[in-house]
Amino acid sequence: MADLVKFEVPAKLNEKQLSLLEKVKKNGKIKIGVNEVTKAVERGKAKIVFIAQDVSPPEIVMHLPLICNEKRIPFSYLPTKKELGEKAGIEVGTASIAIMDEGEAKKELKEITENLTKLNKGE
Picture 1 (cartoon, one colour):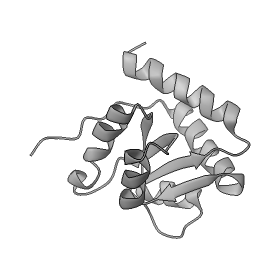
Picture 2 (cartoon, one colour):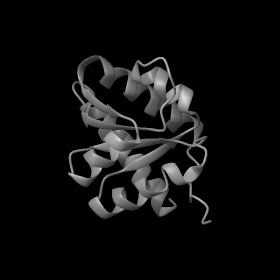
Picture 3 (cartoon, helix red, strand yellow):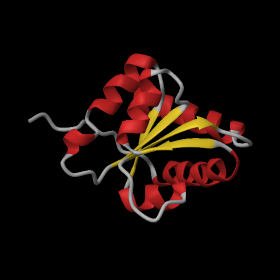
Picture 4 (cartoon, helix red, strand yellow):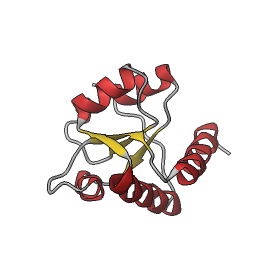
């Protein structure tokens, strides 16, 4: 079985991503869970996708980076499902989250997207 290719997200960027999720939860719109995120990406509605690194088996989320790249939607990894769920305002962990509407966090989303683009290019 092919391993899920992950890039290392710097701790500072991780903090910014989690902060963005908290802000969007209050006044934006998110989709939670692999099925909902997959639909949002396939429809081209997601602005950014976050994937938990501790998903087991990894095949559950393996398709997300591929379809994100295909649709030119930025994606990133966060350490745990638990952390992703907490920041989304749910009591259980989740494998993935898509931001549909960033609400008042336009500046933060733009900054994170730019940082991820640089990271993907190896800058």
